[in-house]
Length: 129
Length: 366
Image (cartoon, rainbow over the protein chains, first blue to last red):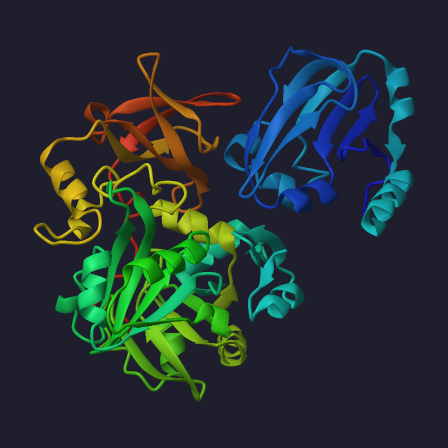
């Protein structure tokens, strides 16, 4: 089940906006496609990211992927638990597998993201191809 | 167009993620690379290795002819023996690494890698003379599975009419498994106790299903196969071994008997006497970040080599790899830096195997 409050990009990142903080991670679909995640290169706290910038990189036992910023803003915090246990992204992609938190620079950017229902439709359409 | 092995339908029904590997549709994983890797170290897994070439080489002159073309001294192998070695070019470069199995006085099985297999067959045809017949078992519908893991003998003993207690490392026998004629060798490429089972496709499917019916056994894919071999420091043809690399610089000179006459022997004999400019190393990184083939290896800011393989090691929980570096920098303990696409990765040259608890040589398989 996809948590209803999340917003998604078509690159399978999610953002959870609470007040002026957005938490970012990757979707269950993305973690499943990557397979066992073995390394996460976290962004630097204090770094300013524009929407669409490469925020960090993930390596799995069989692939590597770039994670793009779903929203622009300043990085406030990173999930340092992922340094020793990157598999949290596989086991809990929407909870303990979060990657970083930012202070969004432009709240209007959320308008370009998909809600949970629309993301599910997007995934279903991808499966058909 | 990729080829399908006799077990292709099994991979699909088991939920394997099928990819193209050397022209074959094979699973990179089923449940997950890490779980499959750990299951091999702790219990037993089965791999479909039907993509590998199996050449039956027979005739009264088979041993003498094989002696001349491969590095294995076939004439000194008793029936039932297996030996690791190489097909070399005239310069001593590696065409392929192989396992030669002596099934009978006049009958050998040469097991080769999938990628070079077609070329190997042509090369054998060109160089094998005399009264020798070559049969390509893999194109006759034969396949191979590798059962690997400390519990593999316990599982397999219930299914075969071969006494696995007395079957040593690198031994081979004909027998029956699940009532089907097959060839069983105590070999593999994981570092664990294990067996390779070769049989016609229809029989192999029965054996594969029977193995998976056992609680101890899970299927494993190419991903785990690669991380398992890398933890042991075993070379992979196309990565550590190629026409540009000879067995001496790959640290495999012990598999070359001196004063023997085979294709490439003058070149490798000469190499044994002079230290070569580069050597193959294994390394442990200081983080989980992966080194990738082709990444430069640096020392004191200078490029001194290149990575040939890299993976996250599930057993050591750190990134590991292999690569060629300038010989004086190859001693264990030397600290080097791998220049990955995303940043520098400090590594330490380490003795092989990187994983030291492998069970492959156990004297008590049961």
